[in-house]
Amino acid sequence: MENYWTSNKTINGLRHFVLVNETKQKGNISFLMVSVLDSEINLSTTYEELINSGNWHKGWINLSKHLSITEEYLKYKSINKEKVIDEIFINEDSLFNIS
Image (cartoon, rainbow, N blue to C red):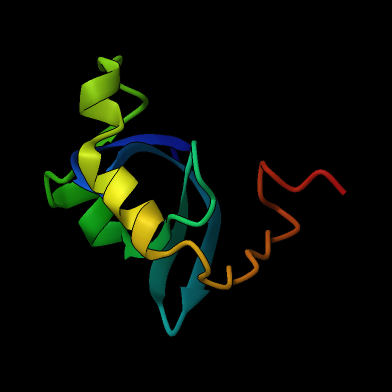
């Protein structure tokens, strides 16, 4: 599975993500995606959403700064200044597990 993805629309103002975990539960595959620029911005998505929805592009698309980091990101950060960040646990078989 490709590890680097670009969202076709911003997610909390950002578009470049890495797939850090893949989990299988009851036959369903889900992926933990984390923003390249801000680990506070992460999401879980399904295989169907990632591959077939048209919302994601494999790899990173070279975008100008104003298209890859939007005003929505600044608003998100100003609203969530004191938000407690949930820990992200990396699976042992993840490319991003460095322990």
